[in-house]
Length: 91
Image (tube, rainbow, N blue to C red; front, side, top):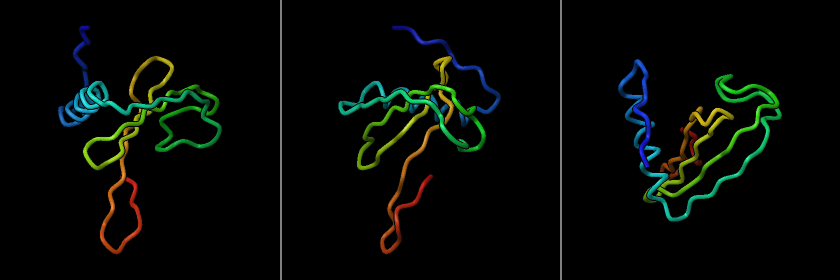
């Protein structure tokens, strides 16, 4: 399966998206749900009522989530890290 080459101005963000896709394709515990956005979204990237697919998988000891919009474009990615003595932190 061939994937188109991403076109974006920031090579760091392109690299992160490419790594997200590679890790998701290699994941053995990938889970996905489709649901509408029913409130304000992170960074105002998604519109109220828009349907998205949230993909979740393990990457080493971390859990990674990605939000994919109706056009099959990755809108958001995120993970959590745990610091000793602190609560779980959102990235």
